Picture 1 (cartoon, rainbow, N blue to C red):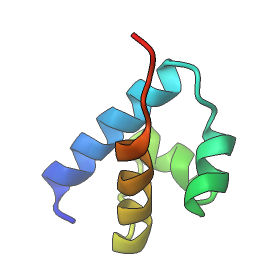
Picture 2 (picture 1 turned 180 degrees about the horizontal axis):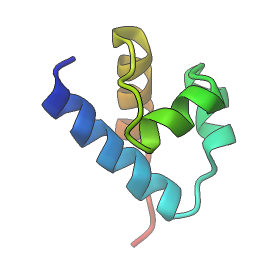
Picture 3 (picture 1 turned 60 degrees about the horizontal axis):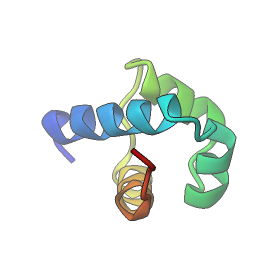
Length: 66
C-alpha cells in the first residue's frame, strides 16, 4: 500500500474515531493492536500490508450516521 493510500486510510480512521467509534473496538474487529492504531492515527507509522488491508476492509463496511 503506497503512502497516498495510507494517508487516505488514516483520514478515514480519524473520521470514524471522531464520529465516536473507539479504537479498542476497531482493534478487536481488525486484529490491529491499539498501540499500532494509535501510532498510525497520529502519523507516526505506516501499517503493514495485512493490517492496512484488514483496516480498510473494516472501515469500508462501516455505515456512520450523518
